[in-house]
Length: 246
Ligand code: C5P
Image 1 (cartoon, helix red, strand yellow):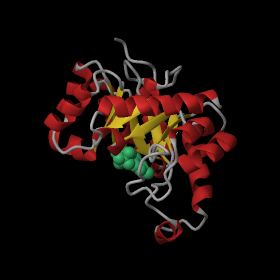
Image 2 (cartoon, helix red, strand yellow):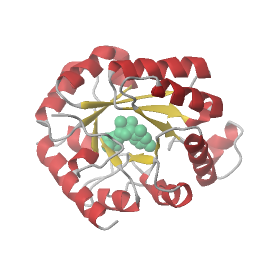
Image 3 (cartoon, rainbow, N blue to C red):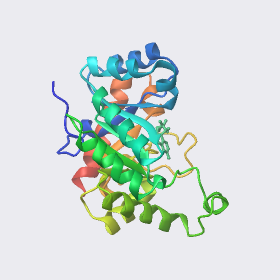
Image 4 (cartoon, rainbow, N blue to C red):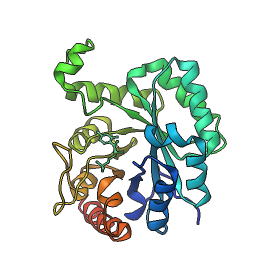
């Protein structure tokens, strides 16, 4: 089964990225296998990658599924560029960088991507959702968070980055201000019937997709479900409803 291109077109199921927020590869692969091919993308972040390394990526790819490598690169341009090439050589489909790395780093990352045999989609993190106005001020950024998000998104777009990671509350304004060409990937989604975990402002899959999100990152609602396949199906149905009302 070939992997879809994250840049679309995508079925509702193809829009789900399951976060492998688990400490060991054994546990992560159990989750991948329990989904039986229902979900095509798996997000590997710092926790799993730091412990298990590239074999975590390779093991997911061996199962015919795609990898979103969420290591949020932020370094000098030459180093970030080579890291993107290394990720591309591993075969990941999506990866993250910090827009705060600045225009030269983002452009270097785009060049690294373009040298890959199968270029991954690069997503920029605009502003971490854990940062509020006072935290931004502490690092010298005085403008409102929403303005900083839009400015970082515009910077990433003009540097040739493929898309953004955005909170569901930011999707509509990013689409309005930056247009349709950027891929928008959204964590922090919860079913209307489910709990919110630690998300202060979760949004439903229907709303996130209706507002213009392309891919949704889902962690605990699938990981902790009695039957992860059923949970993924329910999310896919909600996504289909959102896509229909776009
Ligand atoms: O369990 P949950 O669905 O909340 O997991 C969401 C995933 O998205 C986690 O891997 C988390 O690290 C990530 N995330 C993120 N940015 C946020 C919130 C969550 O990348 N603002």
